[in-house]
Image 1 (spheres, rainbow, N blue to C red):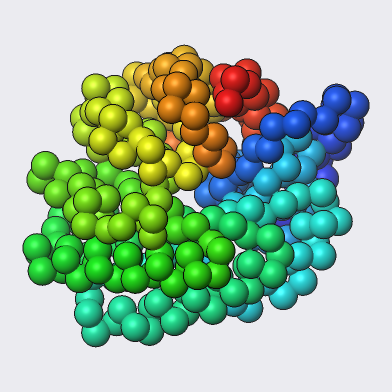
Image 2 (image 1 turned 180 degrees about the vertical axis):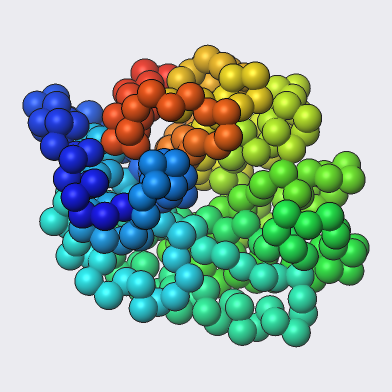
Length: 300
């Protein structure tokens, strides 16, 4: 987004956010949804910029989870986060781990990113190993899945030595063909090396809009959850604001977490897509979403 647009967005929201009593609950936002809101409004979203950080802070959110592709992106970021009262407890990095010829170079790049991130307080690295082609129909072979799981476990072990948690993330592609990729990543890796970033909506959507599949996933892998990505939908379409009740029963999910004494890192990823209602700007939507997150997960 450009500077003028962000100033317009943040002025009223900042006043209400600053007037409110600060919440003890730390809630972060992934940067992906901000880009979708900006695109919908015909704007651009500049990652790590003062304008972007100001908008996030004005919504009452205190955490920043960007997608980072290079160590150079951290230049000056720590100071900007501090200036806007934000923490970066987690970040998302891409990884290409199914091609044995590229694994070593990819792990080297990720480790360089992690070392920079750790200097400004990052504790969780979320990664979603790349498919053969984003949006494509091709699936990985069994040999590629074995290579990928081994590399993922190796990465998690290296991060653990640095005091950093690796959290495996998935989209819908990994749930094709009996969810063989998804299951292999969480059964062929050491639970101490590879934790789980549960993106409840991608599990729901990837399994044909199924809450049964989502809550079965909790029973199988829930104790490995280190982070939650939070998104709601109604009738299969992403809503503008996160709420506890919709296609996904997040109240039930929060209850399950409490019963198992789990308190994962909470990260909003309430993006917009075709069919999403258009009634408010990104700041207002995230402000309301954060309020609902506080209500739903208050018991954790």
